[in-house]
Image 1 (cartoon, rainbow, N blue to C red):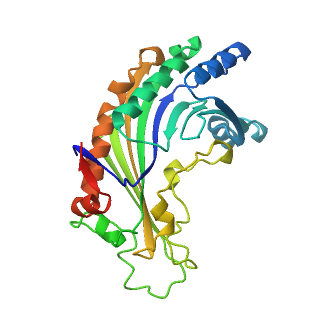
Image 2: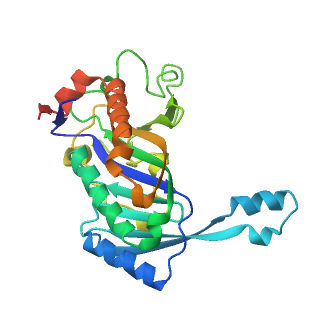
Image 3: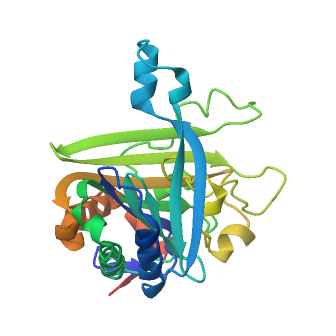
Length: 298
């Protein structure tokens, strides 16, 4: 697709680097990381601590090998945000995740990710950590406010909306919503997942007021680490053309084994970018989308 949309549906993009467990940083390492993020432009630091379960200990407890007191654990994650909260890096004990709500071109996005990874690797011990998997995720909000019904935005060769197979049989339901999920294993080390949600608008409003913007696979559980999403103005002010809107998440993942110090961001994510782009084009009804979202050649 040698071009781009003037009114893109894209609302959220993430790049995730899964690793072996990252050792807890001492005070010097923590300070080095904080300083590196500030130098990279991620000047606001936040921390999230939530309760969870140690799955290994939970399994042992189920087998009678340990006490349930050992099962619960606290999960601490760090978030580093830029000034307007349009980008951030999340550091989890098992992954790094770069998130953006302003996205123009893939090359700009991947160059920025490479810059941030170099900053993280300036903390010496992190360079020795092994990468296990990379994930690239694109989230689109399909908001029918341009004179087109929701179903017309998708490939006409197949019926993809989750509620299509019941809409003629359940007309008097108080509430309807649906989800569709597809996973394709492309190669032994690479797969693509598609998650589509079809959701109703606020029935008390005549304008488009989506009840949420992100699907289950990418929802951040802790408000402290939430991003500032930026829906287009017409999505929340214009009369709607359908009683439903759609949230489309396309996620490519690849097993990729390197040390962080040897990790080449551009090489690692190249095939994930290609397959997400190809999948998006296959899913949408391109002539309709090109018109409503105003496709332009580069």
